[in-house]
Image (tube, rainbow, N blue to C red; front, top):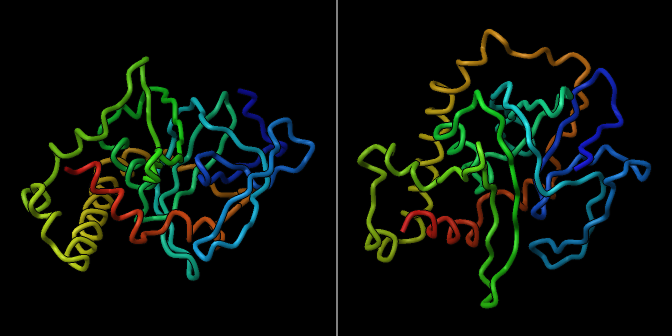
Amino acid sequence: MGFESKQENNTTFLTIAGGLIWNKKADESHPDFQVQEYLTKDNEKKERKGASWQSVTCKVVGVGFNSHDEYGDSIRVSIDVDGESFILSIPDNSRNSQHMMQFLLLGDIKQPVNIRTYDFESNDGTRFYGISFTQNGKKVDLKEIRNLYPDKFKKDKAFFATSTKKVKKRYFEDLNDWLIEEVTNKVCVLFEKEKPSTDGYIDMGVDEEEFSENGVDEKSTKDKLKDLI
C-alpha cells in the first residue's frame, strides 16, 4: 500500500473524506499524493489534496475524544502502521465516527485491523459511505451493535416510519452520546496507562470541509436508518 509519512519522530493526524483516508500535510513529493474534487452542500466545486489511501492495516494503540471551539468534537484513534504512529481524527456525530465507535466496542482491539473507507452512490442516487473493518480475514459485523443497545434504543421500523424529523434527530443524538459513553468507559480506559505523549504531534485538525462533509445533516441521518431497520 505504501503507507508512508514524510515526517520523522512525529505523529501525523489523518482524516476521512471522500471515501479515503487522508494525510493533508503531505505534498506532491509523497508517492501517494493525489487531488480529489468534490462538491460542497452549496454545490460549489472544491478540491482536497494530500496523500490518501482507501485502506490501512494497523494496530489500535490509543483512543480519546477531543473538543474544538470552532468545529466541535471528534474521536481520535491512535494507530500504529508498521511501527509508525498516526492519529485518525473523525468528527463526532457522523456516520464515520459511529462506525469507528461500533468497531471499538465489537472488535478485538488487541488484534491488527484493516480499516477500509467507502463513499459511493447507487444507481438511484442513494449515498453509501462509512468504514468497514476486517480482522483475521473476517469482516466485523457492525450491525451486531444492536445487541448491546439499552432497551430505549431498540426501535422497530414503525418508529422510524412514523416519527417526526425532530424525534429521529434526537434519537440519533442520544444514541451517539451512548456510544461515546460506552467507548469512554470500556475502551479509552484500557489505554490510559499507555496514553501516548502529544509532544511533536503535527495536528492536521478538522477543517470546515471535513466538518461539513461528516457532520449530521438530513441526508446522513436518512442513511443511518439503513443500519437500523
